[in-house]
Image (tube, rainbow, N blue to C red; front, side, top):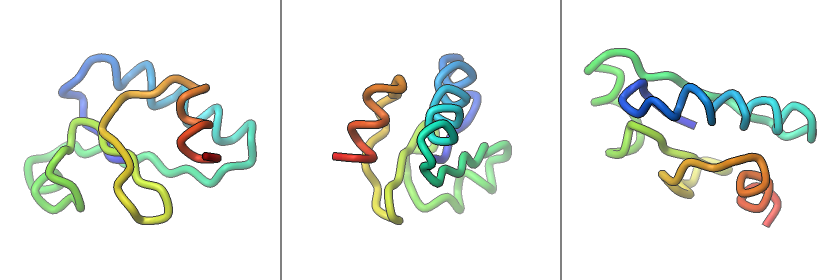
Length: 74
């Protein structure tokens, strides 16, 4: 998961995904992009919120815990 503070909801949803992943034994890494250079070097043009699974881009849609588990397990 790559994200920035550009969207105020990221402060709510990213920790939810981290907690959900930990509770379900899912490997999860959130990378907060803080500088222009970090965003320019990210593996996605959508740096506000970009979710990857197994190195493949999945979505830039913010997810709650249930939607996250569907994306990861489904």
